[in-house]
Amino acid sequence: MANTLKGKKIILGITGSIAAYKACYIIRGLIKCGAEVQVVITPAGKEFITPITLSALTSKPVISEFFAQRDGTWNSHVDLGLWADAMLIAPATASTIGKMANGIADNMLITTYLSAKAPVFVAPAMDLDMYAHPSTQKNLETLRSYGNHIIEPATGELASHLVGKGRMEEPSTIILHLERYFAAKEGDLVGKTIMITTGPTYEKIDPVRFIGNYSSGKMGFALADECTSRGAKVILITGPVQQKTHFPVYQRCDVESAQQMYDAALSLFANADATILSAAVADYTPEQVADEKIKREKTGNMSLHLKPTQDIAATLGQLKSTLTSKLAKKVLVGFALETNQEQQNAEDKLNRKNLDFIVLNSLNDEGAGFRYDTNKISIIDRENKTDYPLKSKAEVATDIIDHLAKVLQETK
Image (cartoon, rainbow, N blue to C red):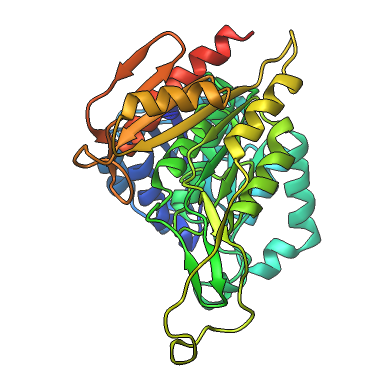
């Protein structure tokens, strides 16, 4: 996955809130992503967390005053504002938000904010009454009008059972906002919409039984994260799995059956610049589904009569030809999981279904296929076959999307 925070210079502003301790987790998360962090803390913030702790985490002196207490060195808020790629104020109290909105530059943090040329992210932290007060909401709206990014505090039911509604959003989510911002600005898939199908489908026999497969959806979700991290809008159509994406996707559509996945893919295909069909869709479905649970004692031996499901790849391959124009070509990517005559079967599928390229993996390769965290693939297009060694599915996703990005570039 592309690391959108690697090498980024981040100012972390900390204010006088009980949530100030979470700044440690934010710092750790940012540094783990490869960012460089400079802390600027208000005098009230130092009442909740000590600068020495923050300095130990960032390997930088914490800035709080205009002049350093040790040697009287002037801390230039102007230089600091120009240094940063982003400024994050977390936690941000109602007092600090009010000062930011009205230009009250009475501490180092506010003067740095007023000098910053980089995007500013604000994570409010206060009790719900303070957050909901008209004056606070007016100040937040003012900050939005200035172009600041407000990371809304937790206000859901879960929050009320924990620390209280209005508490600062969790550090991992705050970092995610920064990652998403830089991905949308800098990735090689900016401006592209990618549709991905993933997971298994369940074909009902009766209300409690189904025909399914072992797909976990891990590969498709890794592809979704890779695309999102590179700036794409991702439409994720997923069968019944327990997976979650690291980055929020543009649109997620949860389905169960092959017919539902077919309908969703067909309805959304026109919106996508590229479609990746990584789902393990059932080839057959029962002709009839029982309304009630089938009792073994009553039926004895049972025969299932199956009918073919609608072929998503073949249908989209035909539709691609009608939707592709001289100005915009639809790119269609398929997957082939094979057990024998792997390359021959994959190439046949590539041609029959009008795919631009196909990702081949084999159940004969150890560590590849369903449920594993690793995969071993070959990418086959109409000219070449490229083999890759066994890798994590996140790394495999990078290889696949690297190839997709080249194809999209060639279609311009």
